[in-house]
Image (cartoon, rainbow, N blue to C red; front, top):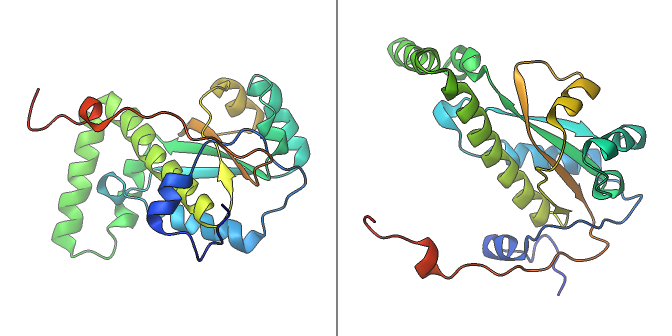
Length: 205
């Protein structure tokens, strides 16, 4: 059953979002709608509100064709309306001053020190936070797309180094996933999910 954006509740969006790998060719997402998707994605939570996600938007067909060999020939990258290269910021601590600019001086100073301390104490923090928080942003983007009548599929099968080189991505950012978005040619199918008694552990193991 098809729903308009107005008909889809939050629960329906979650239940009806499925990974789609076959897209209608030649569908253009209006710029205003695309911007709204990114605005909604930007409301995702992030550690210290550093908003580690960055979205490299690939719409030009020639550039999507360059992604095809870098994603091991997965056709959805050339057929979807847009492919979003979801990036994680490895130096998100550098935006702390900006994030807390409106906070009282003592709070700003405390938070900036806490963030820089965490990043300095363990090199793994930067990578973990970049991937964790960019993934939260990506999930929100997928849900926003579904709510607006579009489909998507998160892709981990690609050549990160090749993508970095081809699209001139600075060392500061790590490619987390590719995210094609568009109109499904073939609907995504619901996949089997584990029952709650297999995924929910109460109190402790």
